[in-house]
Image (cartoon, rainbow, N blue to C red; front, side):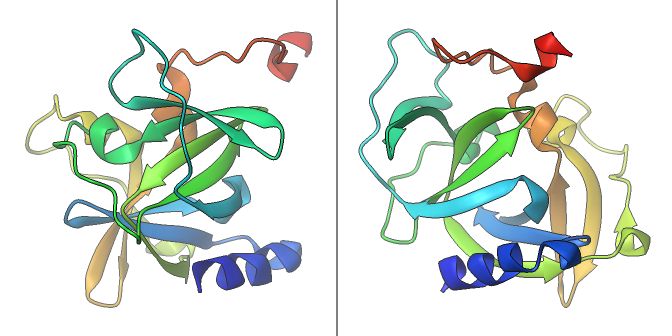
Length: 171
């Protein structure tokens, strides 16, 4: 179902503004702008990388392209959880890097206008890892979705794939 929704949204590129792929990790719902999302795939075999950070689960061969895979739950310093048949990988493209995000469950594609996005509160635990990746809060229906900045999510992951040159360096 999520794949059909994503395909429908990607076909309508002009209407991508305000569209977010939402997913559940732990007890929270998160959203990532659909403009970053390439596809959603089912869990696949992942090759572990020795001595990598614990949230970097390894590398995935996606139709001949090797992409790093991050477990979002572990990245947010939540306890590791076994993968289920609802666990999937959101393949995103950030700053010319393709990366997979393991999430517990896809929710839906939501339309969230800029006027409905509030900055995250500064109260509470400033040291919480997940807060540094959240750029906004959006109330949709009866839930609040934490909107993620994928650039911040991977910026300190220090993931480099041999043979891939960053286009950013060329500019």
